[in-house]
Length: 241
Image 1 (cartoon, one colour):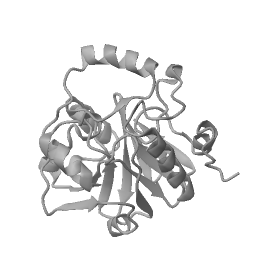
Image 2 (tube, rainbow, N blue to C red):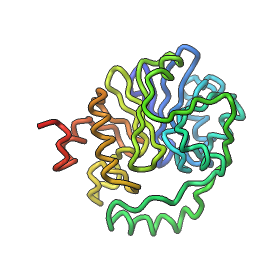
Image 3 (cartoon, helix red, strand yellow):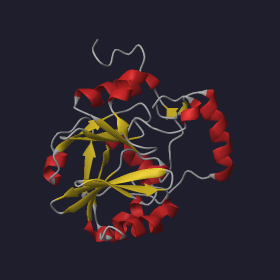
């Protein structure tokens, strides 16, 4: 766990990094980790003087098990409001990661074969939609305003079709798996290690930059400057030059 700025915290929950954003009613949590990381989560926020009931909103960047793993448990304990993309509703209700992606390169594929020996299940407790939810169908400029946070939600597919990101007015961008700083030895160049559509990944990077992203806070790996998305997307003309 590390305090990044006065307005938010970065929580190190194993392989997944989650973010707590301050809002007038308490906190908005971006993503959860695997189901078995809930106790670590409670300990991490406790060290900050925060209890679970202070979390009023939970934004899921997408439905995968390392991002929605203990979402149902947190909602049960706190009654917090869920914010997610409409396309996430079915897999969340099934408690299962969709198998619609492929490794971004052969190195990732080889590493994942080893990972599957350790992590055999991609399931998690089901999260059923109720009226106490905010569903995003595309870019949204009003939900965070209602929550009391200066920023916007962007639809950033490529890793998965339900992927969303948050860009704050100060340029902080919380992108889930839309970009990563992870498995550098595989040469992923900040791409998601698994993708549905790599061209959509670069389109999402362009959108993040156009909407003022200056610093990327990924779910996997350390934060990094947004201009690296321009640098690594060779031939994509992201900087307009």
